[in-house]
Amino acid sequence: MDHFGNPRNSGQLEKYSVRGVAGDPNAGPFMVLYLDIQKRRIRAVSFQTYGCAAAIAAGSLLTELEKGKTLDEASALDAKSIKAGLGGLPLGKEHCADTAISALRNALSQVKGEK
Image (cartoon, rainbow, N blue to C red):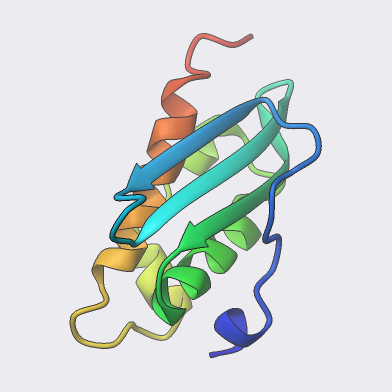
C-alpha cells in the first residue's frame, strides 16, 4: 500500500534515453517507463501508468529496483521480484507486475546495442 499511496518516481523524466511502453492505453493497465541511461547504467527512471492501485505500486517498486543498475542487472528483474517486493498482489492483479516488466523489456530492447 505504501508504493500506491506514496509512489516513487512517478511522472515523465525531463531528460531520458529511452521510453518503454506496455499494456493497453484504452483499457489499462498501461505503463510508460522512462530510463536515463549513461554508460550502460540506469541513472534515473520514472513511470506513468493508467491502471489500478496494483499497477501504480508495481511501477513505483520497479523504478526503485532499477535505479543505479547496469543494463544487464536490470534485465534480470522479473515479475516475481515485483510481486515479492510488494508482499504479493491481490488475486486478479498479478498481471500488473507483468505489465511493469514488459515496459522495462520494451525499453531495454531499444538500447541493447548501446556502448
